[in-house]
Length: 172
Image 1 (cartoon, helix red, strand yellow):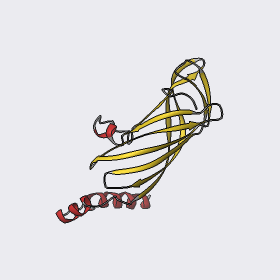
Image 2: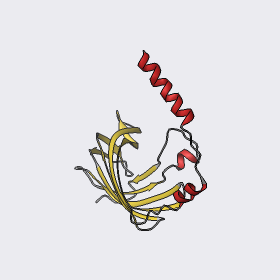
Image 3: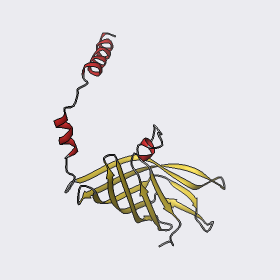
Image 4: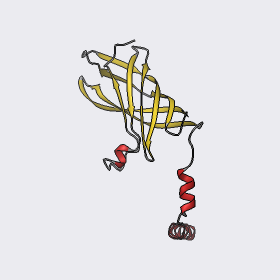
């Protein structure tokens, strides 16, 4: 009990007294940080949202767990090239644009992307890639807008927004 009290006291004290004012010099130094030549590797665990999933013969929105591994190389302070890879950790059924039902067993998507940093807190990404599965490979288009949903639409639980379009392409 005593340990919990001191942990709570420490947390409150560090929250109240740990606030520091940033000087103008350190703000300018942070703004001048260059991204050119930087490499970024990210690993993520999340959910893939599938708008045309099939459950009990009905088309509905479904989610499936997924892992992502992404690499970006910044060729300038505003532009980067990247490779986004994700694998869905489940087998599911989807309906394509020709109303054909396709089973997708652990599909793996590989998408080269271009990234444009439009402002201090706004980046836009897009690319064309392939989703590989044993049953059928699909070409896909991906648009990514990190933090836009959170800041513009004020959705508190969203940190990134990704729109991936399948089915507008012919299968490979």
